[in-house]
Image (cartoon, rainbow, N blue to C red; front, side, top):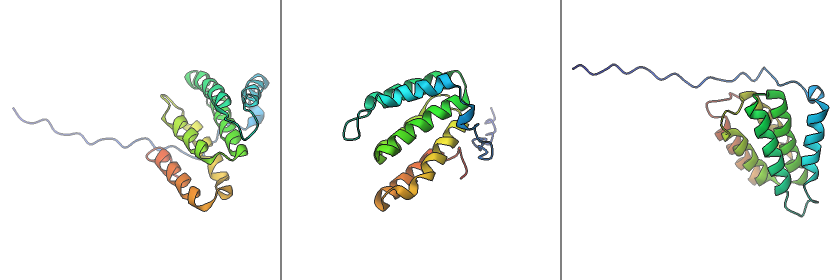
Length: 146
């Protein structure tokens, strides 16, 4: 028998960065109150915000599985903003990786999270900034062309 011809692999679909998720003003008030309640679980900055992170990730899961891009993006951006506000840069990188590796994650959500992190790169000290940029490159590889 003849060997079967190898078909070329299709490249991963590129995500268009030009299609933003609707602004936070279009997020339902009920979702905003859920996000605020989850963020309120975080104790003052010297303490560990694990409870708030877990609550926000559970909320993200609910909206991700419902395939609701604006709501999922709002929750993920709130998670990043909470961690940035506390100055927990390593946790920001971990949160970006966790959000990006979630099953059935919507690409628009990943775009919004990457935009949010790119917006705060100037606040990060130099040594950690390069790690954060490398994390963003790894997360975006084959998915987003920045």
